Length: 269
Image 1 (cartoon, rainbow, N blue to C red):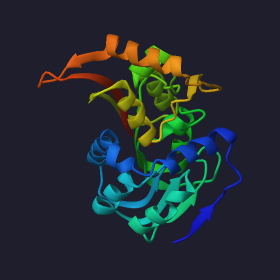
Image 2 (cartoon, rainbow, N blue to C red):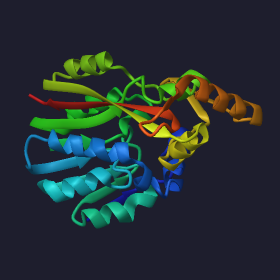
Image 3 (spheres, rainbow, N blue to C red):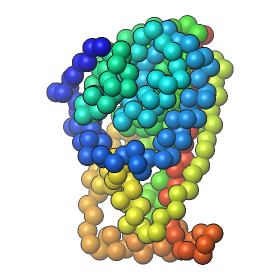
Image 4 (cartoon, helix red, strand yellow):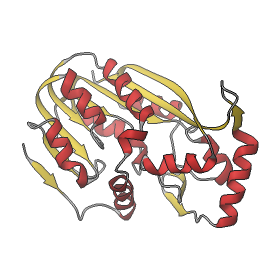
């Protein structure tokens, strides 16, 4: 039950991401899509009996709780960027070793039988590197199960503002998995369109789930700040209603926000 903390080793960008999630205190109440994805990942884990499990980017512990309830393992290693989640994660798995820090730069050991990551690797500076690192960290026969998002994620926001994270597409992920010699690779995409009563409600939802609406990232190595002004917000609301509204089954006019999730299962030979 060891907890390690590396508070001074985060880049400026990773510190900002950690702050966003530290401030998203109602995350679990609004992250319904993320919870659905966690359940899907659990169903794709091949064996409930494991020897050494690593979870990367555990967040508030949505996936951690499912793992604790459904998977048996002799050793647990739980990684998270935001130190405010330490106590929560340790309470879910009291025997786990919890490491707070940047999964791209810290040592997360090797010889894992299972590596899991739910809704986290899109925050990496180089998301595709997660595949290479996982190949190094897995034991022979070990399974990698993770989810991320596609370039169509939050397509309404990207279309109207030019903002959004850099998301590799499914072909890039397939190439990365093939290059790392993974076998029995399965990739699937699920799309969810969430209705909201207003464009402002969309922005509020994003903030409550830890997503900054002030950053635009066209490439993984290029981040710029987007400043909301009163006129920009008014234009955003007007354009959102014009391009992305529809009536729901009750006749209520709503606007949609698209989540497009990529899930991956693969095995190290």
